[in-house]
Length: 127
Image (cartoon, rainbow, N blue to C red; front, top):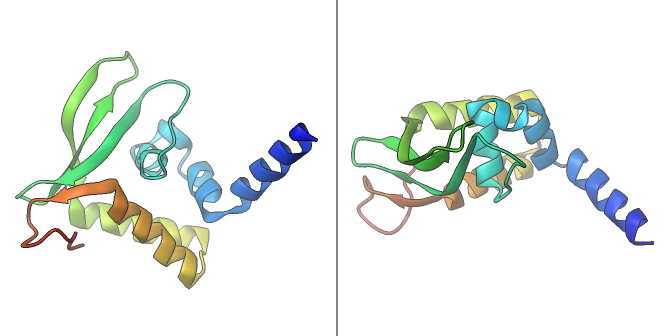
């Protein structure tokens, strides 16, 4: 019974936009895949991986702690310009052919992964 439930939940996840996004971006084999995994609060079995929440600095660079494939931890590694990352996620959503509600959910998850936006005038993320 437990195995059947686990199989059902795994299958449901794999069919969701979250599972499709992980698969499409090749998990932690790509930078976008590693971002997707981190954004979803998942952790790969082995590095490389982003750990914790990301920030957007005053210059518009997204940064996050990162563990490289050799296990070295890098603090607040620059990932890329926020506009490029938003474009990458828009392209991912297009490639996955997500519904409008799934697209909204994807970008809500992305916003939640960003704990602080130093460009913002308030506590709200601005992208």
